Image (cartoon, rainbow, N blue to C red):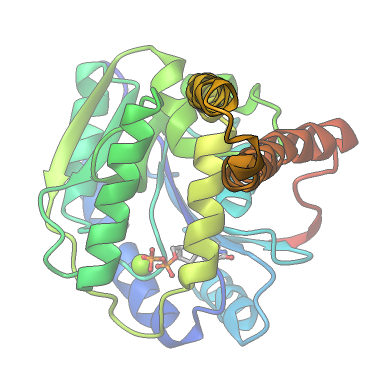
Length: 315
Ligand code: UDP
Ligand code: MG
């Protein structure tokens, strides 16, 4: 390969004071080692994006940046969520690197995969996914819910890389392409495969969180899943349509039944079937409204075009 690439590691952090010092030591020694062995350029660096933490996270980042010139920091003015924090970081590094690698602050993702990603990049791959070979370190619930989610996504026709989170390398050009996706309800994992270019994966074992606790409680996980599905797939709407067709058929059956009872001279008994159909139809109408409402909600937030984040300071 001709040129030694300049790499930026982008690390979103939200209330990570328990784990950040260890993370920083580990990443700095990795990056220095890779610089020393000429795997990456000497002006490669780490960028911590503080996603509106309420604890000591930003003070730590400032301290790291003063102590070590390879460390940079970006403080978002408020908590905007992992995905938006990541976008803020990518936006910040896009003109100051050849490729950027995004990794979680808790280092659950094996940093040994980073040199492998860089090696793939040097081979010419512009997007390299970190894919975990198993989920043994996750709780039963997290594992099952995540795998169920990937299955649903696939069935709904959303391309996404199985068992890949947001641990990936992207070339500066791929990042610029990605940033053209200007939607507010963003599900990064669903967009990257759409970018095309040359893509590959490296595999690693995912470890348990080193310290602190997961910043993705059930509520955020559900929001994330709903976002992922509704911002990529219109199949739920089609499902409603087919549900409607099904109910038309049922209604036809009821109609035939009512006619038979009518000609049999037992008209009073129609009450039961009437009640049944009223209940069923109301159910269908409500489900349909719920789903359509979800999409209208999307249109609403899309139309508002709120900024994804606002930067308070950078160092
Ligand atoms: N994170 C963030 N903003 C948030 C929530 C999480 O920047 O609102 C970061 C967090 O600091 C971590 C990454 O996103 O670096 C992944 O979060 P976590 O490890 O808690 O998720 P899990 O691994 O449990 O899915
Ligand atoms: Mg984690």
